[in-house]
Length: 160
Image (tube, rainbow, N blue to C red; front, side):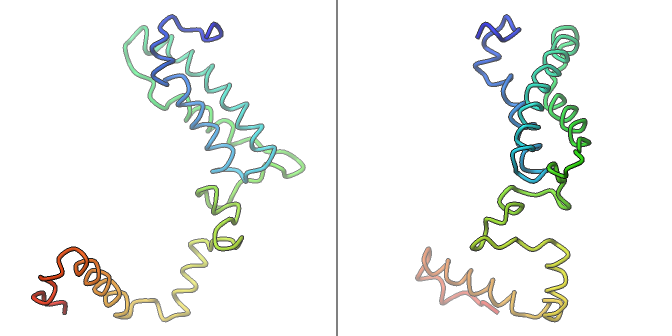
């Protein structure tokens, strides 16, 4: 606790000093970059930098003007560090920022989740996916859930 440069320890206990660094670490390690050792190292550097930026903004915004910093430290630090790259290609930016499981291919037995372009191509191959089957599926699901909740009223509803 002695390492924190604040006099008001309630800010620490409320989580104000850990929120922005945590958001920065998550954004850098597994949202905008592929999750690997280099992106995790970048996330640790980003979390430390966010702490410093938050302290500077707190001194100028919160204590002087009473304006809360919200997530400005995370945004500033993340934007600067997103521009980072290396020659070896270890910090590979993802083409489509998304959740970590999608980027790692952990879903569906280690298959990569299709991108939005691949989904659009698949829908075009199926005939644009605009047939009435979706409406029928939704109607069936509603009917099943209503049967479980209100079994006596299902027979009186027009499902067409």
